[in-house]
Length: 132
Image 1: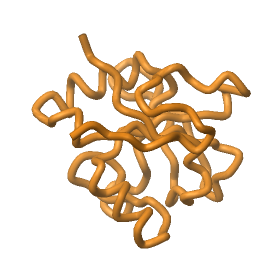
Image 2 (image 1 turned 135 degrees about the horizontal axis):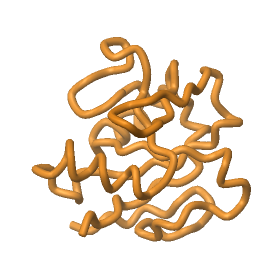
Image 3 (image 1 turned 90 degrees about the vertical axis):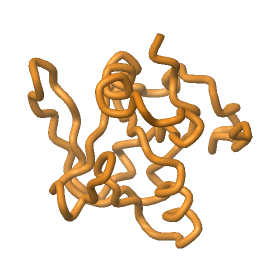
Image 4 (image 1 turned 180 degrees about the horizontal axis):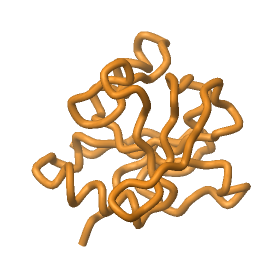
């Protein structure tokens, strides 16, 4: 079944260009659809760090700065997951209550959010990009 959710700015999900307004304020997070939908249904902040790990377990929430990083993470950690079971959260860092640190990981620098993501900080929800 296709994911038909509209982004919060009215953008159709599946359009994977970064929002044009202040892209330096936006981070990307690959989320399992079920975890994102559970947070939305409960009205609680999103607290899944990465595949199979919570914020409490990991200490931060893994993010990406751009679509190239997202594609690399998808290839490395989510290759066996149906893309329909994933969504890409676009996060406005100016709406976060937690600090963001850009930290080196395997020769690249990735943003990490050191706290939960309020639902109001997620400004768009999109399909994950194709890796090839």
